[in-house]
Image 1: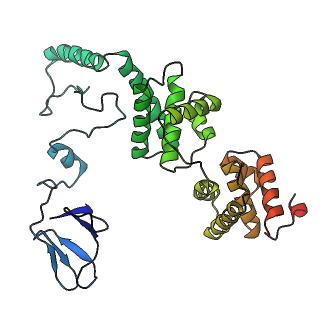
Image 2 (image 1 turned 180 degrees about the vertical axis):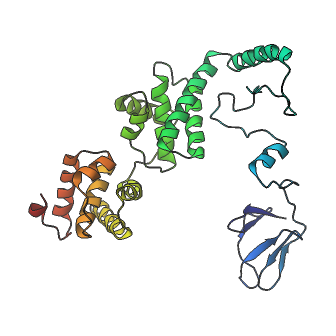
Image 3 (image 1 turned 90 degrees about the vertical axis):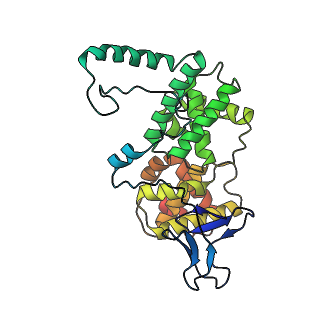
Length: 323
């Protein structure tokens, strides 16, 4: 029997073997899923690859968010962003019952007391209090950095693993939470520097770096070092540069990596210098100050890395003229 692994790409994989089918085995054309008949059919020759396919979706339809909310039969999915993973009961603050009717005035006092005690018993011990505070901090920092949901879940999982391994003792909750968020960014290859994490956190950069090195070593995260190429797309986008300039900067970084010019250098500084060099070559005016501000480095760093690139690479830029 075939199971659909990705509806958008129309890729189907066999349950018994791990082979993935995206084209017809007879003519090589695309195949599609016929929802009315439950068949997986080739759109060219009509070969049926699978029949009697089971629709695992809901048997009802919703045309707006209100209908979807009313007709759903399950609660929210489990999440690591809540200390109890979202499994506990929550009493809503609206004074309405399950049918939407207002609760009588004589019962509101009782509901208020139940609601108060429910919020208290959700956090029972010191570990849960720690998680409640840390996960709310994680969510706040991730929201300020505009990070996606799966990255937030990963950072919460890293923090939970640190708590279970007793790595929090003697360290600030904010520092370990910020370090977990930075580790998740490195895992998902989302370019965020320690300076950017420190700006939204309530601890300084040194403490975040110290906590990150500690938990990555103890939890054996095995994170690869960041490269200048990881920051290129975001910096170019924030500077409003063209695709031509981005391709030029990408080529400069690639050649610099091949010649070992990036070894022992900060990735953001090398990326900023490559962008500055590509701006000169493509006649797109961007100042060193603006590039340094976007890339979270100093103007001196941009100038030093730019000088190294000009001296070691044949870029056709006169160093004296630009300084």
